[in-house]
Image (cartoon, rainbow, N blue to C red; front, side):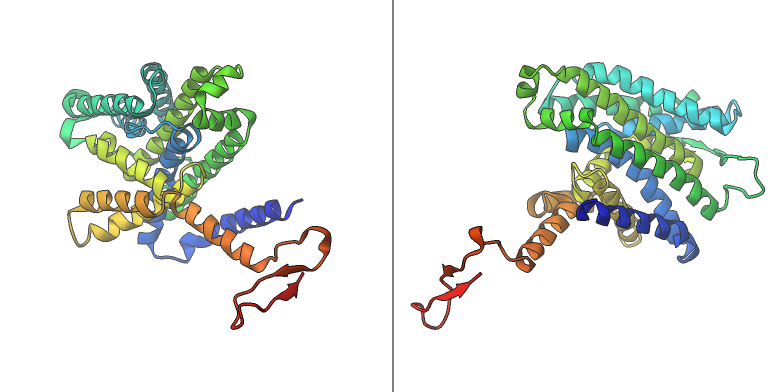
Length: 344
């Protein structure tokens, strides 16, 4: 096993152990923020499939997140179905919506794709805001019950809900990781770099984009399902363009094309939003400034900056090998510029 793979496996195993014991070591408020990080991290990772791996920036990704949450709210509060049926219904709604929207959006590229997804997302927001008899309009859907697993412990307890959300988050991470490292995932990177070249090589690029669009929308819906059960309230704000913009910021802040970077970006956005909102209501201004600063000074996101720093440190620590292993004359900056030394 290569050293890089060994280090990665040890890091993942250590992270899982930390996450399992973390809610017993921190205050309940931070457990709440971690649950939100996992939920929004699912939406951010699914968006990264489009942005980071396929090169398609969507400004309507919150539509699938919110639509799935609304489906759970309607099924549980008005029809009183079992939570498993509500979960499945939310995923089906997100899946079907992605199927339909993908037919309209994936034919476009670059800024046209962005505009179409923005328009579709705002259409969903308008439907949630105006269809008062079903969605509750601006009042939203309150009173969504937590899942009832039929066990002695209730998911009303934040710690129990933490493990419930963490289970689905871990399964989603495993599937998405296998997906992006599969031959299909590698072909998405080829489309991102040069779609015309992939088309010449015989790839059906539109079908690839459409497939990843549907998968991304479905996993965003999974985040919406968990959000509805945890927050126990859904409103039009959950499908607004602001929610989609936050998802884009999560991907850029964490690092597009890294899959797990957006989870880190989701954590930063969640913690910053809750911290700043305690002092000012101008969160949207802070959101915009943060977006501009990240694009200007850290285009690779936090993960990209960390990788660059690690590479520079590694280059300084490991000497560059000399071909043939023979001493080579190298001029060094010394007090006497004419002085030469031998180094290996």
